[in-house]
Image (cartoon, rainbow, N blue to C red; front, top):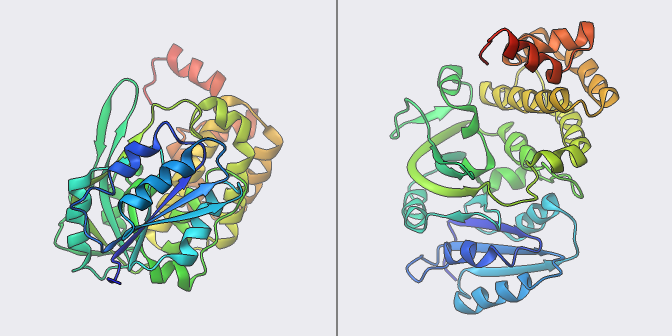
Length: 326
C-alpha cells in the first residue's frame, strides 16, 4: 500500500447532480495513488451513494467510501479524519471541483513540503462573473510564520477560506479536531481551531479549487442564512472560548473577519436583536482591539446600532442618500 501524501474528504448530501463533476476532477487516470479520496455519504436519499461506488470501482487505489446517517457537514469531516492516512488533509465540497492538472502538481509539491499548512489559490464562480482569489505580494519560495502580521494584512480576506487551506493531518489529530455536528458553517471551525497549533505556512502558486457559487440552496444564500443564522451564532460562541489575546496574527484576522460577516448579515437582515446582543456583550468584554477593528470594518455602523439601535437596512439608505461609498 503506497504512502498517502494527501487525504481529501468530500462531504456529500443529495448531490447526484454535481457529484460526477467533482469526482471526475480527482480520479483521472494520471492522478497518482499517493492521493486518498474519502467520500462521505451523509444519509443521502438520492443516487449519490451509487455514484460514489462507480468511482470506487474505477479507482479502488484512491477512493474510499463512508456511508453514514445524516449528521451535517461537520460530522462528515469528523468521520473522514478518523480514517485519513495522508500526510496532509483538505476538504472538497461535492458541488465544487478541482483543477485536475493543479491537483497533480500540488501532490508533487507536497512531497517536498513539511510546513504545518499550505495556502493555494481558488476560483469562485458566480452567476455574473468568475474570479480568482490568489495571494498578494508573497514569495512562493518562502515559509511564513502565522505571527507575521505584515504578510496577513496584505492578503484579501476571501483567501482565508476552506477552499484555500490544507493542513498537516498530524496537527488535526493532535488537537483531536471535532467540528460541531448538526449545523452549518462549521468550515469556520476547520479554519480556526488548527491555527492554534500551526507555526508556519507556505503559499503554493497553484490554482486548485473551483468554488461553484451558482447552486440554489447553498448555505451562503441569503434565504438559507436567514433560516440558519443561529448556526453561525453557535460557532462564534464556541470560538470565543478558544480565542485569547496571544493568538497568532492570522488567527486574529480570520476571527475578526468571521465576526464582521456575522454582524453585517445580522444588522442588515434585522433577524434577531436578542441573539446579536448576546454575542455583542461578549465581544465588548473580549478586548479593545477587536472592538475597534470591528467598528472600523463595519464603517462605524456597529456603534450606531449599539447607541441608537440603527440597523444596516437604515444605514445603507443613509449612505446612499449621502453618496458614501463603502
